[in-house]
Image: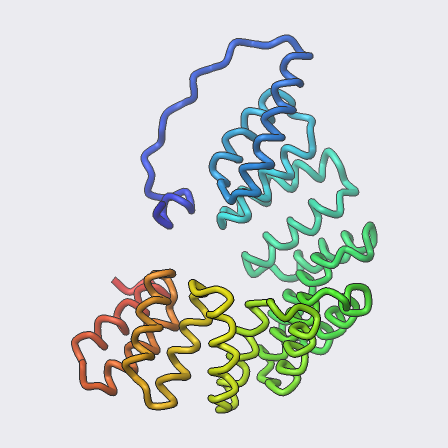
Length: 304
């Protein structure tokens, strides 16, 4: 499915749905309940348009159900329809003002729109209702980092680790923040803790390999990225990073094979196009390099 269709643009409207016969109240509530349950499975499968369709009918049948509004808002958020998500979360919170889930999700939608102050207000409210909601703490940390308030973001990650330090992801998430701050030694330490807890954690190997790459420790980077790809041969980010490392180690042909595969797996992988373009340029394959740089500009900046 194309990005335009996923984002709700470019598709021809299907026309109004065929009206359902009016149901007795008890039957309407029963049908709405099944639709909500089916939508939950659609969401688990990332079939968000199908979830939205079911939830829209469920809301028409039972408009006072906060869960349906909340779930539809989350589906809209996950496919980048942020304004629609905000509208649904507003209605969910009108019906259920103390829903930490709806507040946290609305905060994520605000953050995706760059409305960080409103996002932080929602995260603060959610955390007063559910102080140990780790996903809200992480979302708040991300918003603080986007505002450049890195020390506060690190404090949020420290809270997550204090509560959930036996989970590898808690360490990886802080490692990602350290890497964003260009504190690569600290990032490597956190990724190592994540891997101590879960030696099969593909993302941990991939991210630590990337951190090693950033400080020119290419052999260590290559070992980590090889492990990530051994565990998941189709890990596009590990393939892209290994391609960059192989190029630094002088093996441009192997680098191109990795980058070709990474782009095949994710045709929107901007960084891989840029790196492949640089390698092609170094090999004096300038027409191909121009094509990759042009594609990178189209993806990142919308160049025609």
